[in-house]
Length: 503
Image (cartoon, rainbow, N blue to C red; front, side, top):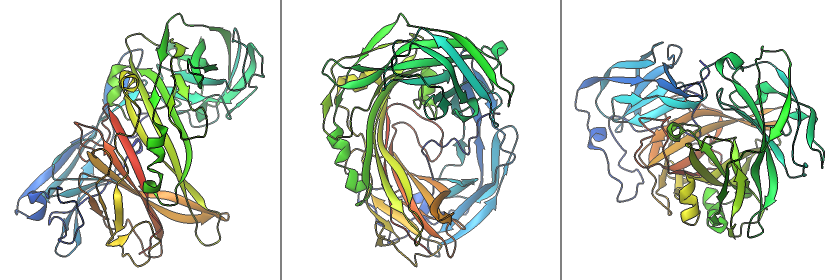
């Protein structure tokens, strides 16, 4: 099966509190409720269960299959708040997509799936997801694809090519991964070549299963109010059957879709920029963009519901943070008229981390809003939820570099000052060095509906140096601690980056 539930975590991570409940000294906002079930062990033993059904949404038809959990490390932890001790209860995963942990005491559990922890008092977890594209074999070795085509509109320096296969669910951009890109003024492609394996979700294409490959010319244009943007313009479409590791050549013509549309936004970029120092006092602003696309309605609940091509409009006009009212932006639409139009706005930020004299590692995060297209046009586009406030490692400010935090450290925070967070996600990264450069690898993902997490055993190890990303999520009607791969619109997130800390 092409999809991995353990790696699919778009953006998400996890942790929690044990059967004894929150420590008395825990810093939480006054309105935050404490779950009585997490504070008192009632002496009951129950079974923790979960199911992992993946629904593939494809042009050739939808299909639901279990995700094989037989190789997944499954453990349920409880934590005694009076001693800080975690107790492990081993579980199993099965090929039919189910997981089971027997004889777990009542109270809050940390359900560990690989490096992912779901922190909840629930005993039933929905580990299912929705994926764009049919189930298939992922290409893992270089598989060159060469395209020759006529009929483009004269190529402009700011144009680019989206590459996608709607049935297979493969997506990418023929930019830096491609050779033979068109020159200014060109109206054809002559030997544009790229490695298909470098696309996102590169399912091996098979024309007998209904797979088609598309290249879309995203053409540089100017909105009614003079704002530069790129809009879907002309599309090349071809059937192709691939053999992994072997090259293919396809040819044909670009045509202009008959269906057209318009999109306009009142983009409050200053509202995103105002949160920069909440991400981290030393955070650097890097980009801001809006894009709009169309998806099958079922994908509004998918982890990758609105990420990547095919885009109908992409707007990242300059590096400024001033507000923009675009006026009308036009585009051609080759996608089914019944599909749901969705839009995303994001502002990117970075922070650098360095071990000793090694070249710094740059961590990228964002503040993001994702809604139906109609919501973007009906009201100003601004953050729906902000970063958490006053993050702590144990009881010390988390923005400073800290030592001696212990292997059983906790992270705590106050609620965002903008919007309402429905869940929080904590990603823990361990720093290292390689060839004179600082590296970072994620060692744990923790989901919680509380304003704190205690780090389970072996997340932090003596001698290691770490940092955390704390995400606040707004996604009404869903709980990332019990259904980590479910998505719905509207949704939004914002990140905080801590300083470095070590046990």
